[in-house]
Image (cartoon, rainbow, N blue to C red; front, side):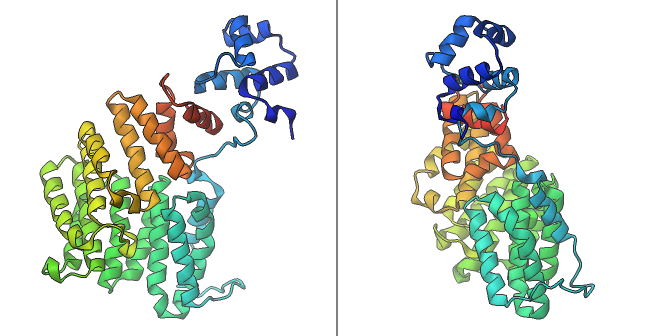
Length: 399
């Protein structure tokens, strides 16, 4: 262990300054600061609470900013361009099954076993552990594809595997690859209305992420009304959840192109479906219920530019039990959106508070999701940014 890892931040600055054979005066001159300022930092009298300052110090000392933050600070990259995503791309680009290519010595697993693996991948995703899911998917996709080729009963597991792949890739801002995954899901699901509707949920996400909002609205409405029960009271919760989630996707697409009338109508229609389902449900991995509709209302307000309404709605529904029952990934994504709303209303303190909550429940949402990292970088530029976020931003190299 390097002895500097045991020191407070100011003493680490002094340690590395000594390692570089710089006097306090020379170090201060290179930073554009006074010798007194350097002395106070090194003695811990003055705190380092700005990312830009930490990065300037690290640049003068020729070290990684993480070294100033201690041994537990580890730089983390957004995983959208990492080796794991490259492997997912390779897995989605294979055509071993239709071309009858050999499995390369990999055994064909029973359908029930791969279905359990897919369920595990979904659970991991819903807990916002994105790097773990990215590492799981390349092998999982190969296993599920082979299992389905050997046993038609594996179709549902394969659709779900493509769905979780698309959901992760949308999170990581790789919409072109997500589109390939969801296209595979739709193709495999063809002929089964429930599976098609489930895959269409991710289709809506991908289309919106690709700025194809009008197409998204049209496709979501077609899928929703295909699965909708003739009478709400006669619908089963799983069916209502799929239909309602598709309506939410349609509403968000309408909000993205400014159709506020359609937004209200679609969200009200989804709310009617959510009432008999209730909160705390997760049929077809949708998390659909009254609170999910409330979250969508806030998201739609954000898309329509009404940031204050979105923040107000957020404060109201996060008091509900249903908020805590939503998947962590769902809550974390919403929190990042709310932080952005606070920034747009010139409230960096509120944005920082929300991001601290996000990091507490889902660290990967900030550390690995591009929009999370970007929001963090914007928050820490404010002088009121929480110290925990400043240190996190420095360790990530953003800000």
